[in-house]
Length: 200
Length: 384
Image (cartoon, rainbow over all chains, first blue to last red):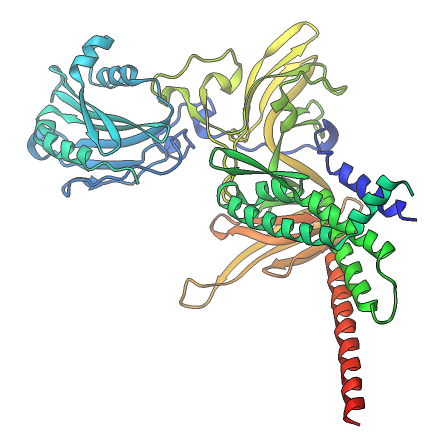
């Protein structure tokens, strides 16, 4: 007499072990497709389309910083964690401060330094040569590699000030680019910015 | 009765077991509540309550605990056994009987809900129609024969099979599907945007243009994982190529094989319905002069292929539409984009907890009333 409820309980309990992991097939009326995100549709993506594209930026808590008062905060995009316009005045153009973060080592220090060098027309460096250019800062629990290089060609000549650090399994990039004259003037502000970096 | 069987029976009947199980359920609820901060409600529900053994992560330690099915199952057996061997049905105990029957129903109802409940969402833009809902959690690789201009022949492969990595063969497909690489959660980025991108895997179509970055699995309720995989299709003449598929791509990738046209995409698992909902109007009303929401509502039109139903229904907060065994709740909306998201729940056992609560209420009422009346009679007698 006590068997049916017990058997039912065991049967139901066993049923719970069965998931929906079967291949199924069925027929449905023809459907309209969703659009592919612009960045992967194969068409050349416009800057606007890219801003709307989900990108593989780092997740988790963000670093915090204090920007110099005269830097003008810009709207962060899907790509950038932070963005500032550094007014150029008579330096021949404005500067652009970008803050990005990517999961993992994002290709490594050397590859990224050479990518930045390529952007202002400088040749790639070897590991040793890049190592000689970098200065190291320890700020709280963060270790930041700081680089500074400028191109002699170009009108006006361009320069890049950069900081690279690892945090929470991601690599963070702080890059100020713009006319050499402007960045020479802004270097103390950039260094103060780097010194203000804090883990939350 | 054999002495061992007799001992087992005594254990199952004992009140001591009831107390131990109640304490175990208290601990389970406490631990699961703590775990929710890291793993979200869905994972905790499955891992702690809808399992026989729950694994509690305490720092580097993994502590096994009796899961909801084990505690609930033993309570169920304990209650039934106690009624068969310990309790005698009398008017005096009728309330306890009724309360316990309600409790048993509650346990059975939860078990049925765990097994049978389906919880999906349906997103519709104003003017558009939907005849399927999409899972909140599960994903599938859909390979669809689109040769016929009227119909699509769908083969849906659950994400779990892609994760297993085993070659998949199905009678409706003239090729095998071989998962080569699988990420439970990954984000895609245009290859040209990535600093020093890794070498491109041998892929066709969009896989050549994007890089997939593996991401930690998210357990947050307001986030979704984007499962991503590289799958190779292998026909009788050899490989057709390797495709990158991801729920983040949204749109399908097309290819031709064996004289037929196919499309393939990773998507949220779909559940097709025998009826169609068309969104006529989505409303987000606010109190005049304020930003305080007053009403969220979706006016939908229900149609069935045979023409059996052809009517409007209004879904708004706390007033779901019950239709075809499903309940449609107003879940989210974006009135600016004319988009509504309905939560679609199918739970054949939804009435059981209500019945259980009524039985327990009646049982407790009877039990207290019986004792109260007895007490008053006794008092009256002693006063006389």
